[in-house]
Amino acid sequence: MKISKENSEHYNWGANCSGWHFVSSKNLSVIEELMPPNTSEVKHYHNHAEQFFYIINGTATFEVENEIFEINKGEGIHITPKKMHRIKNNTLEDLEFIVISQPTTRGDRINEPFIEKK
Image (cartoon, rainbow, N blue to C red):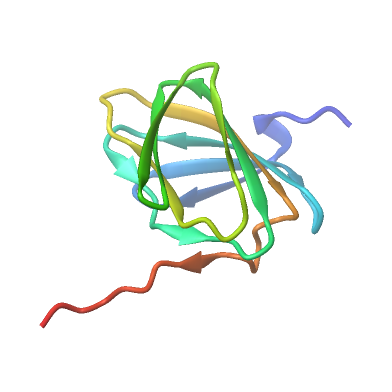
């Protein structure tokens, strides 16, 4: 079957971010996502899933453990299981990317604990 944004499941996340599930099975997830300027996701990790992010347009800033990586159009980054990470769009243009997860991240996402300051 031919797969495109037009015939894929669409969802919204974060601050006006969008995603399209191209493949969604328990063994594999392939998603295209769009992040508007100055948006980010919450730091998190996956116990089992490894992920590969490929940038279609824009520049992504990845925080992986305590390192910062800038990934440009035509580049990618591999995130292994149990690595605390997040993606940010610190630019003034939309960020578009493909994220491939194996196995799926559904039910395998642990957000960084929020610690209330006293």
